[in-house]
Image (tube, rainbow, N blue to C red; front, side, top):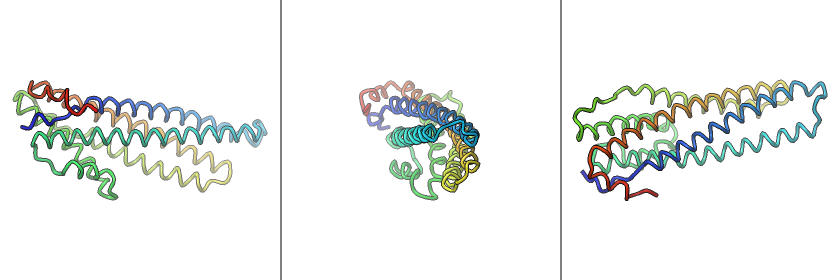
Length: 230
């Protein structure tokens, strides 16, 4: 095995998990602000709030939306870097993989393909990392229960669908009631996103656990600590 080319993925895993935690926090703030905005809308016709207050609340919503977008972009970059290294390390171990390193990554971005390839490659990482460990530790019992990966991906896809529906509902909104309805869909979208984040964290933690085990079973893999820690 070409062990000297294996690269450490610990920091990338850590940074990705932190980014997920930050996005979850922003989602919680978004849910709270949207609930509050709905309460303001409901009282607006009774003149409980001034136009200036409504405008400032809109600015706060826009700011939080921009922050959410920045967090998502940052998370995508960190997640893809982590995923690429996890997949690439198995290739560098000379394990037969279904795709090239670039092919696995592009599977997240190519339309239609990105509905199926990400879940396939994530399952591949989970199973084949364990098989790599088993080459050194024959006592390892393979965990072939991949339901948590399937659930994560289904929830992730559902989150995109709900988010898209919420955006269209907001663009169509004209009356206060329509804005409230659109906000309610956004609340559902944020809650689904939080669930998706929780499941993604489980996926990353499980794979990271096996990656660390792979480092430990063969001392020759200690070179992993000096290579590719950027």
